[in-house]
Image (cartoon, rainbow, N blue to C red; front, side):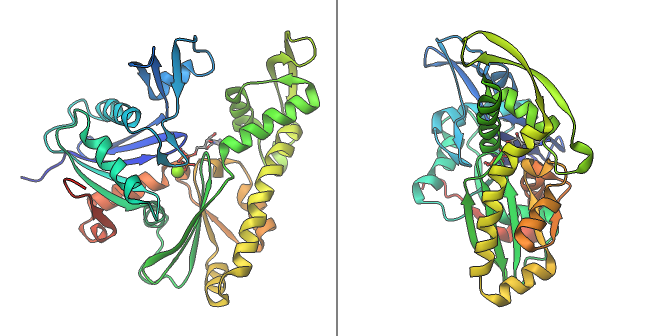
Length: 338
Ligand SMILES: Nc1ncnc2c1ncn2[C@@H]1O[C@H](COP(=O)(O)OP(=O)(O)OP(=O)(O)O)[C@@H](O)[C@H]1O
Ligand SMILES: [Mg+2]
């Protein structure tokens, strides 16, 4: 009988996205796990994020996925099995799990996908992997077979994955160290420098989401925050402007744009010509910043096509893969025992 216990899983550094075929739904939850006294899992996902930066010493709150890779097999296994059950209360027998994975993984990194699916209580699943840029390309509607040169920028939480596809394959997939977390860090530093105020990363993330903008209409906004005064050590309020936030965001993003511009200059001219004719595809959660497409077009010197799926691009590519037989050619199977 047709097995509908099929899941698509994108393990991101900031968020885990899961698609359930049976329920035909997607969930997104923070990449976070809260553990008491080193052994007892007390919360995962968004519930664990609520404890982040507020946790008492006996509770650790960690991100077990780092740079889009599995950093702690046991913790990711616990996170995954609890989140899969949140997507679909009964994961069912012999589920199939399709993971989006980085290109050029080592054998050890590949084995981690097998390990997280088999150490726990997931009913001996069959594990499939698909390259992340391929998942993105599918959801972006790129004709992979015909592409003579297509560039995708996936600006996530810890990195920007710069990928180039040509002649039915991924010819480049390199991470640049520019993502949402670096922007948050930059905002924390700028607030400290200009306002003598220490703010947490969650506050910086909130400031970024409401104030960062490269559109004219986004200028002149402000938000009140509470932090710790760097001189007195006491809590204090301050009003943070969109100008300050945009300065911090610009300082980080400009580095990334410059690297991509240089990368394009070094790419064979016939590939660069195709990329510039087609425009660079932009996706990932950080591409939600208003006007970032025009900002990058200006600094890279190439038209930008921004996806409307943002952080969901990769998991939406997986959704298409699990539903369409012809797209299965992009998937490779994890053997039962690596
Ligand atoms: N409205 C917004 N404005 C700016 N940034 C945003 C917005 N919404 C989400 N983000 C940022 O997007 C990032 C998450 O994007 P995404 O889910 O694509 O990353 P990820 O896949 O978890 O990480 P990575 O691809 O680096 O492993 C976070 O850093 C988050 O702060
Ligand atoms: Mg991602």
